Length: 138
Image (cartoon, rainbow, N blue to C red):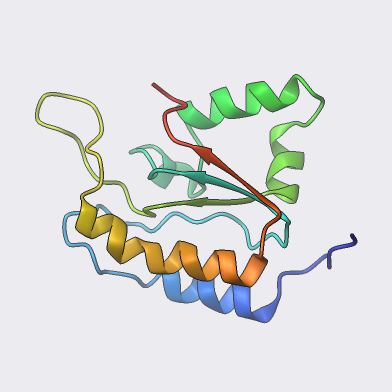
């Protein structure tokens, strides 16, 4: 299957709307989203960590280092992976820290609010496979 070398207008418009999302008042912006890569494969995380805002891309810090080390083992470096796989998350903003340390897990309401974005991406891309990367950095 040959995919276009550009993102469809619908995917770009979707991401532009996503970047404006303010549905979850406890989530810490900015919204983090990957490149609008047309791909039959999606990599889906839980939520960005505090450092992803520095690099403005999903899996841009600890979890990403672990994830990309796995794929380097089969000859797929980070740049190639990001060009071939649509990277998303259940929640797109940083949930904040827990009082006892570690990142806060998004609430049921936050997951429900954010699910509209992931659902739309699945409809747009119709991936053949999705990889759920929940606790990579832990």
